[in-house]
Image 1: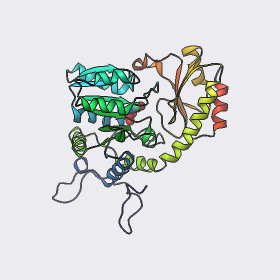
Image 2: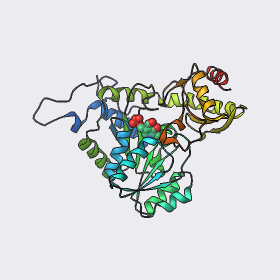
Image 3: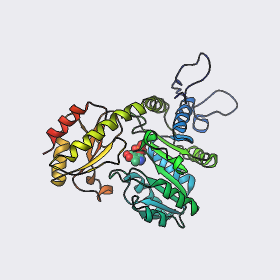
Image 4: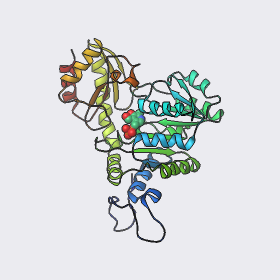
Length: 337
Ligand SMILES: Cc1ncc(COP(=O)(O)O)c(C=O)c1O
């Protein structure tokens, strides 16, 4: 993919990191208002993969906030169980009387369809963090549009390699580029990709007035990471599929959750919270850590967070990396009771 590269004869292959907020001239060029070539390169590449026009932000949460700011719903449909950060943001907006929220189980398509009537925005996260539920996107987008609502999809766990929600009818796709797009656990960045020019303009305006801009180095690293995303996903997904099979046959694993694609796997350790915490303390190759999407496998017990109190106490969410499968399994098999 050549999207996001300088195109002129003699140009460098990658946009250099331009550490500048201010530009000489009377045209008033300023980084927050005009962007930089580095941001624009990243936006072009993510836009090309998703089939829309992308705006880069300082984090995934900044992209999610901008989507809500730009679409300003009075009535929002939100998955009951999804990334706790977005639920915390919406809780604040509800408390400030900026919107009303309807919580629906994302995997219950009939309930999602029924909730669209009278809604302004339907927020979808698929697969969900951390229980990996999958939404029927074509059915939900059809019902939302029939009701005059816009659909935003947080596709962080699917990545642009495994899903292109705009082609299933979504109006906006949101990514925490911090995760798989960056892919090396070394940056924070977010992206929101719009299907239409009108929504793109609103997202761009949201970044301008909220000042939620990405950093120059972060945009450079995210675009460099994006170039290897399909290769990383191939290896991570192959590892994930194999681990799902082996975990499923393990006598101390009560349940394995895997949507059939991607690199996120959640499994429930028989014996509950204490047994699952012991696994996180015993692993040596896997990293006990809260973020995900890097080349290294990370693992975390999620129910310890107040926002994830609903998930089984022994559930471990694992972001599968690119290590050798034999090394991964040896570490897990040794750490499991
Ligand atoms: C599904 C999902 N969406 C959004 C975010 C927020 O992204 P960031 O941490 O880059 O703000 C996360 C972070 O964990 C996430 O898992």
